[in-house]
Amino acid sequence: MKFELQHSSVSSKARAGQFYTSHGIVETPVFMPVGTVGSVKGIHFKDLKQDIKARIILGNTYHLYLRPGIDILEKAGGLHRFNGWDKPILTDSGGFQVFSLGEIRKITEEGAKFQSHIDGSRHLFTPESVMDVQRSIGADIIMAFDECTPGDADYDYAKKSLELTQRWLERCMNRFATTQPKYGYEQTLFPIVQGCVYPDLRIKAAEQVTTFNADGYAIGGLSVGEKEEDMYAMIEVVNEVLPLDRPRYLMGVGNPVNILEGIDRGIDMFDCVMPTRNGRNGMLFTRNGVINIRNSKWADDFSPIDPEGDSFVDQQYTKAYLRHLFQAKEMLGPMIGSIHNLAFYMWLVDEARRQIIQGSFKPWKERMVVQMRNRL
RNA sequence: GGGGAAAUACCAAAGUGGCCAACUGGGGCAGACUGUAAAUCUGCUGGCGUACGCCUUCGUAGGUUCGAAUCCUGCUUUCCCCA
Image (cartoon, rainbow, N blue to C red; front, side):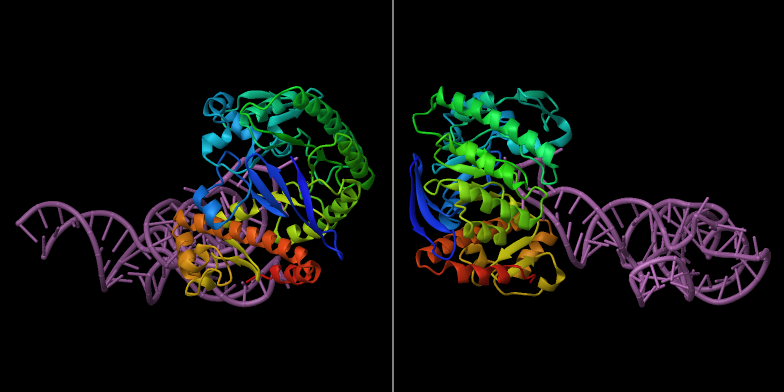
């Protein structure tokens, strides 16, 4: 997978670039909508492509492995063929589930033992099996199997956790190198930098991953309970070490402010459930701040959802009507909320890219960060 | 016309002498959500106060009692059955 760095900001570490996959070119910075089980919840791909203009979406190894299962995905000819999304897909490895499934999971040197959240059945994920599953899913970019260290971990735990992630990474790389794609197009593997909020661990982690000369690198284990300034500090520390000529992917982040701060620090790729989940729950992100559309003050506000927004839902529907849909628990409400938020996120990264290219990113970002913190 | 049952907060509905400003649902109001165990979860919902608390409430007017949403009497209203 080739990555081209097109423009670098002078007053900031922000960059604009693009990478090439078998399913198309992805311009960066980019936001990747999360489609855990092979679907971006509540959104038709038609809208995702034409209106939201998503360039790449996520899938999740753990969820897809449990349902529909590997045999179905292989019979379908991979996830692209199964769900009909013909643009790039990135799959997360299940490392985050190691973190989020808490009680129903156990970590050993060999791998992670899970109980399915669906039926309680027991499963073992190893670095090798996770590579194999991701070969079967057929994502363009696949992720190493890691332990996502909690943000409040003490140094000792974080160090041991990182070392396990590092050993698992070697096994992932070996397995990946000795297996082939199943559907005739290229796949690439991104390692993940862990190390919690400890700079020396983060540096060690970043140094280790770069030795594999991967096509891109991810920073994981952030926005998982640590302080926001710690997150930014860790991004800065890690990006000092990661090579400039490869994309950097900040996993699971974040809110619109986090994204601009990430871009400012040299991040190229983001994913987060926030636009979809919060949109489903009535929280709208706009360039002027956040709207809780369920609030009674919108009941008779017949202005468009977002007069400045460029999604069709922003102009088509009024705030009062959208609030009504949420009050009435109509499924259209969460759908509109999700479309709006995703379109806004895509606008945000596209506009950031434009500002980087024309050399005005920093002041624009500073203005946006203040504006977007408002509560409307 | 005769007989029976019931009236509780925005709605529905528990409670039938003190642990009741009153269970629980719904509705309403607000909040949370960051590589999705989430179209989910949390809090509040008589008034005033951040709070300890104080004040006014269980159709209505009286009464019994140390104490009443709960017991008694009148009235009002609603529902059911028989004519």
